[in-house]
Image 1 (tube, protein in one colour):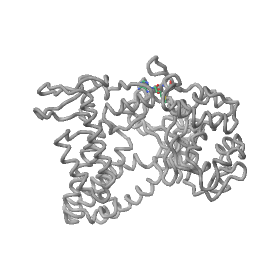
Image 2 (cartoon, rainbow, N blue to C red):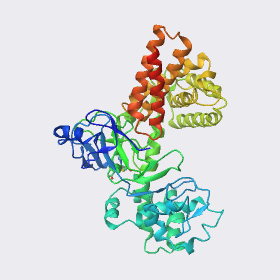
Image 3 (spheres, rainbow, N blue to C red):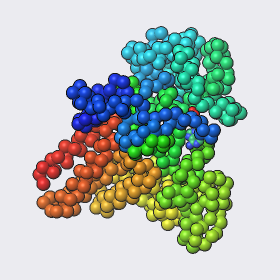
Image 4 (cartoon, rainbow, N blue to C red):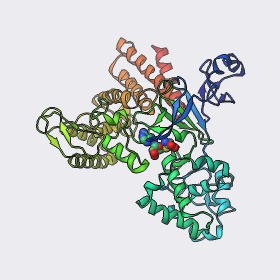
Length: 514
Ligand SMILES: C[S@@+](CC[C@H](N)C(=O)[O-])C[C@H]1O[C@@H](n2cnc3c(N)ncnc32)[C@H](O)[C@@H]1O
């Protein structure tokens, strides 16, 4: 499915872009010509690179960037398997059944067409002596661990000019030295490449640096029907992190090109940010994850506020007075927590233990949720009282139900009670309010929630009201508006254009009949 972007002149979806900046799309040469006076001032990149001691390099808007604008697009210089991966075709990244082997190097692929993918052909296929892989690639016994060396090897085999660009990226080599991940790289990648595959031209330090660069800077690339892989993009990886980011990214399924889209208007001088973590996690978890994987303590606005910008995702109810317990200093992972009403104090270890046990319980319930959604409802009831109705765990349970109700066998709309329809509707509204704070604008979370909202509204309208009633018409019109809003966000994601088009036809028909 080729990605379409709206023509800058008339909004008609198009695949042709300005050949200079490749960020702005036109449906025809006429519209490109007509827009030139406007576009010529915007044709260069809308960002510059700045640097600070604490954050290193980062991207800053050099002019107003409008929500929805493509900020940059680029091809990956390296793409390949993640450290933990399922066995996959090294050409197209689909899961393999080991029925075809590369005629040159003997690595499992889908077909002869996959032998020609440049990253495979110029990487492991050219670099590894197939006779040395015989034991590791014998039929029926491929250990997914052997894939760990592929992406670093693809990096190491790049032309010098590409390598020079990537070598400037942050590796955190010093912080990684002596850690578990450093030892794992030493055993599974460095020793494997040097002593098993006899690639002794690469020293252990260089291999460790490359692995550090890959883990600090790669984007995860997921497509339905393919194993998820990682890609390294020299400019996109200069976006620093913020727990409320102002961009999102989409990948082109044909060439893995990344496009960075502004989710909100970004003023000249503002940082252009991405999120390296999960927006529904609480502050303790997000900060710990960023420190352990990316080696920095986040100090963004959201992390600084003990109430997480008023969302209370981290908050816990006080068992003494039912007030709200929050951290005394969220930028200190060891700080005590305190009830804002009665002042009683909890040690952070106690708070962490509580979060860990609730998270574990939710994980177990979520695995059964397809057949037992009522367990998620019980969880929500129990922990809205026992922790906090806005707690991240309660929110995650609600989001899981929003995705299940109406979309899963046995939970399709026709089988849902009115009560469950109403529940889904309420959860969508609550979660959208939250998303407006933690993932505002044209974010993927808002796109998915708006999509779920329009579908449940349509079903409620059909069920609750007569087709010629004012209530029916109002609900359907609102739902159609939400569909348009979700389409504006999701149309760049693979598979979504067809789904959105089907929904549009449904609403077209209903609106015509009204
Ligand atoms: C993908 S790189 C981003 C570009 C990087 N700043 C550079 O100079 O190349 C990720 C690294 O940037 C730094 N970084 C990103 N966001 C940060 C933030 N909000 N605060 C501090 N450091 C940050 C961390 O060192 C992190 O591991």
